[in-house]
Amino acid sequence: MIKSRHPEYQYLDLLKDILKNGSDKPVFNNPGVHIRSVFGRQIRFDLSKGFPLLTTKKVFLRGIIHELLWFLKGDSNIKYLVDADVHIWDEWAYKKYKGESVKGKEKSLTQEEFIAKIKSLPANDPFVRKWGDLGNVYGVQWRKWKTSDGRIIDQLGWAINELKTTPFRKSIVVSAWNPEFIYEMASKGKSMALPPCHTLFQFNTTGDRLSLQLYQRSADTFLGVPFNIASYALFTMMVAQVVGLKPGEFVHTFGDVHVYSNHIAQVKEQLKRKPRPFPKMKINPEVKNIDDFKLEDFTIEGYDPYPPIKGEVTVVGGF
Image (cartoon, rainbow, N blue to C red; front, side, top):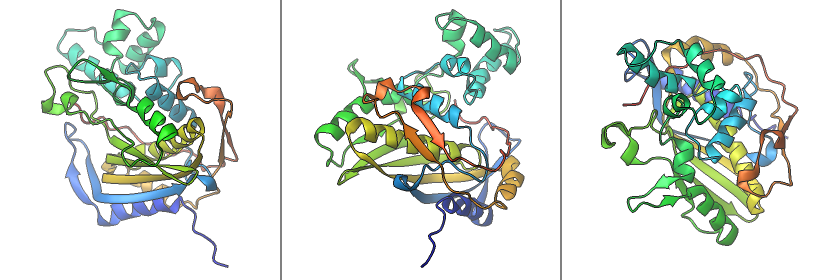
């Protein structure tokens, strides 16, 4: 009997592929680092065989869940995350503030002081509303897409209704890529803090199983991709539950998939580690509405990772 290969090796093989075959490229707006990248790759995980939370380094699951709940709220302000002590979006809000403080238009604060101020103030405070807001990021595009005729479209709400009524359709797609708010295409002051890296996703049903394929145009393989895998795998499980299906596959398709030059040593350390069994994710079966999930509805069992490997976030993008 041939023992099947651990699915985490798909991720580790991707890291090896980048190191061996990647091309070095400059990083926009950040001359201190470069990326090594390949283009057009795919990995996939059968969600009936364990939850794909990487084991070759510990992954911050609480942060992943809070970020996903933030997306589902259609929120664009980091206040919710900061209050939950999740700081994965801090740099992008602070980048905008720091730019104005350098010009003398705002008081000079360190990032720690800036985040502490947001946490100390109520959500409706003018400082929080102005500087904590990241614009038309993922959650806004998923749940509050603005149309040219003044309507607001809940793309995810529509997709869930389609899965309940006509699950066989091939058009159940949700897009975060809205040119009206990206780079030079945006009106002055309307560009997103970070154009969507995970660009669009499509649902598919086969029998009683729901699968999701994500297209990610740009992927920070060491820091970001472990989050993305777990987040979209969990998202697939949540949507499957609310539409009355079983989880199928999470398929992760990449455009430019890369490693930052200041992460290469960490990648080589991770590649020395042998994957351990994936954990199981249990979701409160009582939740039947996508808007009703909360942190306490998720329980991870059997997660036995190697220690975390730290890497510095490289803040790029924006306009």
